Structure formats: C-alpha cells, structure tokens
Image: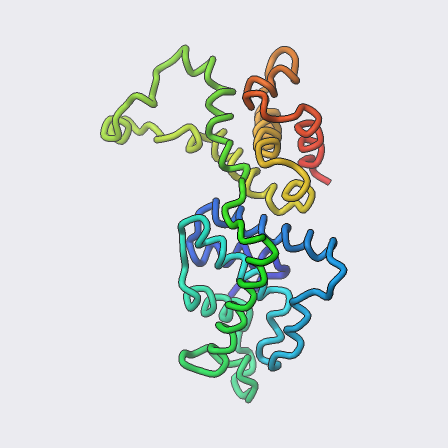
Length: 262
C-alpha cells in the first residue's frame, strides 16, 4: 500500500479515496492556508497544542488531524458532504499499515466501531472542526480561482470560437452522439487550467494575499503560454477585458510570478 510522505500527499490521497471534486480539494487547501496565516499572526498559543494532552493513540494526528477537519468541513461547504466515519476509517488505514500484528497498542490495529479509539478520533475531529470554524469567522464558502475560470476561459477564447460551430447551443443528446465535450472547462485547455487552479490553492501566498479572481486569471495565462498561446496587444488591456476590470494588473503580474516553478 502507498504511504503518504507529507501532509499534502495525505490530503491528496484522502480526496481521491473519498472521490471528492476539485472544488472540495481546492477549498481544503485554502482552509489550511487560512489556518496557517492565523497561526503566523496570532500571539496566543496554537489551539492545536492542546492535543498533546490526548491519549497516545490520538497524538499521531497532531499534524494531520487538522487536515482531516479541513477536508471534512470543505466537503460540506462545497456540497459534497462526507460522514465522519467515511473520513476517519480510510485516514486511519492510510496512515497505519498494521506491521506489528502482535502489538498491544490500539493504534497499530485495524480500527473498529464502536471502540474507544474510534470514539476519541471522532470527538477530536469534531473539536478540530469547531476550531477551524472560529478561525474562519464562520465564513465557509470562500472564493476559489475555480469559480472564475469558466467565465475567463470563455472570454479569452470567445473571438476564435465565434468563427466556428457554437457547440454550447447543442443539446445533450446531440453532444453525446457526436462526442462533443459538454463544457469549455472539459477541453484540454480547460482541464489544464483547472489543475493549475487547484494546485495554486496549496500556495500560502496565493491563498492569502491575492483575490481569487487574480489567481484564476494568472493560472489561465500561465497555462496558455505553456501551450503556445499568448494574447496579442497590450497585456494590461487584456487583463481588464477578461476580468471585466475586476483584476488589478499588478496583482495579476505578481500572481504569474508566484506561479513560476521554483
């Protein structure tokens, strides 16, 4: 069985196991970065430090238990809710390979419910969600770059698309008959933009310091350049046209710079 080597790998694997949509994964990363910003700006003790008082079979969750709470809360805010047991069981299995079958430590044995271990893990997850809610100021539906990508992509490719067939006017059955992808976001360009937008939410700087609109436009521009597409004319004017004058040109340039590989 594959074992996650870091918290991001754990979050990615959990999202795949739970078959969560991209929006939920992006929101999870955004929550994590909002919490990290809270940690960096707060002078009070980290509320998660209280977990050191928990039993040994729960303390393994210190760095990852909060990731699970972000995933759980994000699944609710993006209308893809997962029950707590749906999250707890695969997370426990993912992190514990039960190598030592003879061990008397309950954390090394398969999780069962009801059990003291399961009850404690569930209670801890509930408390972590409450902490996260307070950190977020109970504002769960945060703007994501994914919210703006479809509109921006259609505007960016609109002039060219007008010269061809208007597939958006086709009915569902007609699209299925002729193998036409349903939406612009389902095209190769759209999928590449979506992947970069989700990945951008992992970036602390992009998640906390820039509007989601600017990040969406920066992701689209970066992907288009990588595919050999570059808008003609003045770039500032292009930014204004695609965003409806709602993205600052300087923010856009800084986002593009932040998206460059290290």
